Image (cartoon, rainbow, N blue to C red; front, side, top):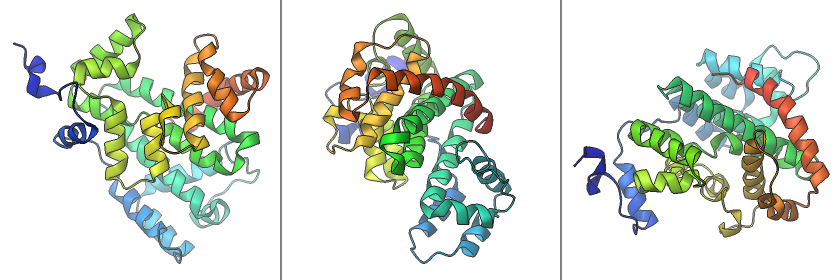
Length: 289
């Protein structure tokens, strides 16, 4: 019997979520959120944190400084005059947006840990495209959650990194099953691993102590109707995920529940797709690995 086929290599099909999470906990070398990101996120929990204190912490990582300046000067924020200092960037962004940018930076770092550069690029481009579409969906109806929606898009498939680290061969096999059949990525992963990126993503976000809504996004973006909360963000990421695949295929009937829930019509959707194609190219240049 091949090593990867031994029953002990994966949970049984009838395992509970708790049992699957216990199995996932035993996986070696799970990528971690950068220490500096976790440290600054913890500091942001203090409502009295000052801009100089935050600037001092961020300045310890030149790559993070460069990333924040690149993001604030990108078309995403539409600031006409170039921002050259972290202190000015922090004042303009506000603490909520800084938190979202930090999480995005951490996600990017975790994707960079993927050794297979081809798969790394495919997963990253998909995540960025979901972030871009989520941002555009929010533009008119949900402007207050635009930055959070973009970050949720970057994180929605973060669990795939764990699958890839755990067993690259089985992960490639799950991709091939998805490409050569009508099975979803979740079903293909269950066949190979006994769990999917849904459970591994939940495990990672729970470990990082991220918000419940981000954990719900990771768990239910494929089926938001089953989410314990009726938060629009889950539906937004679900639709954005569908749209990222429509770049290669035509729009299908499966998006109708999303349109109804988010009060969008087909013309608005086609505009989002058109704008998304243009913005994705710019965003990938800004967020390149």
